[in-house]
Amino acid sequence: MPESIPLVFASMNPGKRAEIAALLPGPFRLATPEEFAWTGELPETGRTLEDNALQKARFLYERSGLGSFADDSGLEVDALGGAPGVDSAHYAGPQRNASDNIRLLLGQLKGNSTRTARFKTVIAWVDASGSARTFEGVVEGRILEVPRGHHGFGYDPVFVPADSERSFAEMSSEEKNAMSHRARAFKAFWAFLHP
Ligand code: IMP
Image 1 (cartoon, helix red, strand yellow):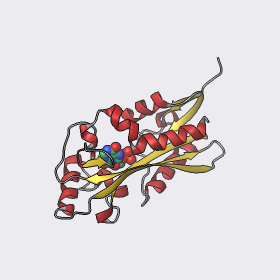
Image 2: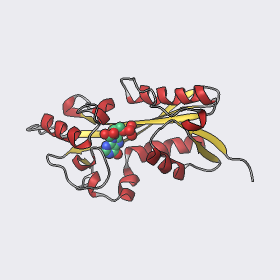
Image 3: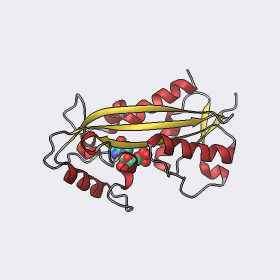
Image 4: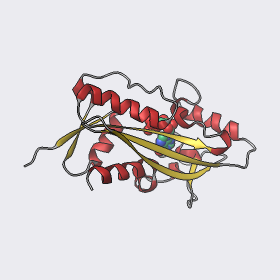
C-alpha cells in the first residue's frame, strides 16, 4: 500500500482535530503539533482571520518542514462594523465564555433592526516549499433577539442562516455541517489538495 502523506493541522483542539481527521481526503493523514514537540498555545496575534490562520500554519510549517494548515473562524455582525470577527472567542473577556459573549452581543444589538451577519472560516495552507494560500467559507444569516436551541457551540443559539427559520443550535450537527462556513472552507481546501 502506498504510504500516506502527513499534513500538519495547526490546532490544539482535540475535538476539532478528530473531526478534520475523519474528513481528510485520499492519501493524506493528519500530523499533530505534538509530533513536532509543540504543546502550548499557538500564536494568534493577527487582526484578521486570515492573518491568524496564516500565523498558525506558518508556525507549524517552520517546526515541521511539512505542509501545514490552520483554520480561524468568527462571526461578523454588520451593525457592529464586522465585530466580534477575529475576537469572537473572547468577545466578552478572556474567560472565553459563550453565554457571556452572546449576552454582550445581544445587548449591543438591542433595539437595532439591522440583524444581518455571517460566519466566516479562513483556512491557510503552507505547502512543503513554504508557499501559502488561503481558502474561505461563508454562511450568511441574521442574529436573533433571544437565543434558541441547545446544540452546537459558541454563537449557534443566536445565528439563523439565510433561507432557514431555525438557529444553528436548533439543527443536528449533520444539518449544520451541510451548510456551515467551516464545511464550505474545508470543501474548497480538499478540492485543491485532492482534485
Ligand atoms: P475558531 O477559530 O474555530 O476557534 O472559532 C473562534 C470563535 O468563533 C469560536 O470560539 C466561536 O465563538 C466563534 N465560532 C466559530 N465558528 C462557530 C460556529 O460554527 N458556531 C458558533 N460560533 C462559532
